[in-house]
Image (cartoon, rainbow over all chains, first blue to last red; front, side, top):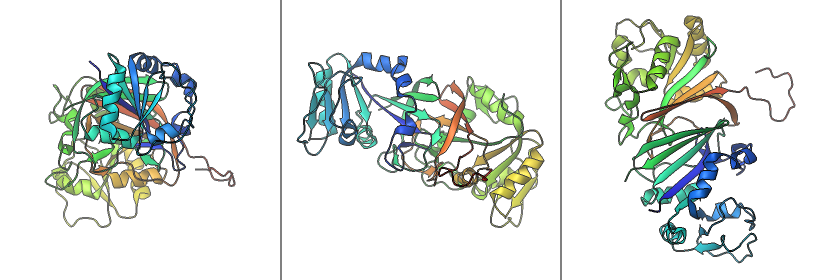
Length: 183
Length: 219
């Protein structure tokens, strides 16, 4: 059955980017991260990806070589007028303007037997958690206190949520905590 | 084994970084709506601690708990924590460990028991300094609350940070980490996976002046 995985990399103090809006300090070694079994496993099981508009914009309209060569569904209010590079017979981008739940629905259909991976951003994942649409949550802690930036977990939007620990994966200095989200 | 005589922030937090749920009070020191369960890892485990039968931990959490009992030489806490626990009725669970309470004014009465309390009214630096002397070659542990933890962090007093991550999203409450003027680089020292909690330990790397204008800054 298709599962929805949501994951982000955060500083120990819970920021997904720094005071300049940059994620560089959270990814000191992208090449090493790319070759981890953890990411390879994620790529293997992913049939479709969901992301927020800001996450999509970080690619600067070029998805050439994106690790997830699968249908991409972008949650957005408006459809940008743009040409996206890197599109092929496996990877194409659909802009979903009727909400994150609809994006998940479409991603599930596109993923068929495989899973849906939500790669961010923080706001998109929070909305999906509130809607009860996330099956597993992966939080990758990096050994840094950013002290400012965009918080993964903003206060107040959802009530207490019990998580079931599934695994802890160490990849160099990074520690990933994997949880099943209890209904 | 980490070096003796360090200053360690040691505290439990939810995955979303809260050390207590909303509406924490004397009646509900860990707050409400899930906050009360984040300390389950050392209260409701399957094995009783040989140091104190009020604590029960499971799996490798017992190692972590044992370490807390065996390596803590002095505690630094905030006034709120002292008040919420009623000064542990005069006897903190760590026998013989002095407790330094950071506060604006010492309380009028202190419950009598086995713990030596010192109320430090002139700031966290002084509290940690006194705690260091009292701790000897064991660790100074900053055990809460968020306010004291943040002050110690900003003052550059912490050598290591250990957080016990409880498997819950509280959504609101008392945040452990507040905003900082500068980033602080850490180094992952140890990760211990245990039933219902993950123990993460980090070394605090000394901040380097970002503009490089003051090479004489030795902190």
